Length: 338
Ligand code: KG4
Ligand code: ZN
Image (cartoon, rainbow, N blue to C red; front, top):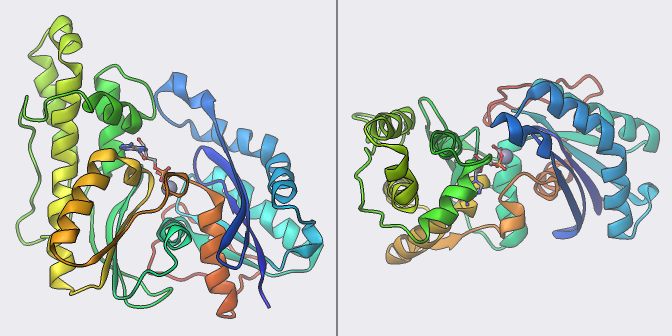
């Protein structure tokens, strides 16, 4: 009987540990590494070292907050890809050690699968077939689920991920890192029709995405303006850029939802925290008379509770990982490695 599951997530720059009991989150500790801010992006080696320094303390804190001892755990779920290889290995080896010491099973979880299951934490009633728009710093995918643990990728990005477009755009505008929340905040007071940035709708691939052109068009646009103009109009530029980035996500998701006749639609991953995406998608899906689900903000960005929830689903189906499971920087959602 799998009741208490510990989740471990170290695939990028968040060190996170969580404990779930059935569908409930008992604790979800997330420590974000601030060291990368001054570099304007995540430095892989620094991320691995920071994970090593605090993973034991973060795990102890998660147990303490959950009010249970480690001997109460029935299983461990850990991200084993995709992500920064060194960073993923820290969490994976930690989970393997725990599994051996406590003599309980562990299971490797695909980080994207974790994001999708973060939505089930907030909305356990999600009905299949379910369409998930996965939008993060590394991924932009439309994933069709006909049942639990069954995934069909029906669209993905050809180049940059949408979160990357937010982060790189923010960098060009001289804002900090990560850029998504900063652009979102500035856009609140801006005019989103101030400048028309391009939207990539790909011929013959209605569900694939492309974001490199958007970033380049911002670079070209800023090159024609002086610093004072940019400073005075920063909120309008952010609003216009954000509108272009989100517009494509909304249109393609609606098209896919209709084509695959799904019962419900979800948006997951760090960019699911974006206020325009949340608002716009809620309105549009309502018009299609489908159910629409968003994770609470805590389960949008990287966290271990979502990994524990996906782990519970797998462990309960009798799946476990072998002691020699590897970390995979480009692990695909539809390849199962255990
Ligand atoms: O899922 P996540 O925490 O990490 C990855 O797996 O990549 O996503 C991080 C991404 C970053 O690109 C960040 O800028 C973006 O999510 N993000 C946002 C917002 N909050 C986070 N993008 C747009 N609007 C936001 N409010
Ligand atoms: Zn993520």
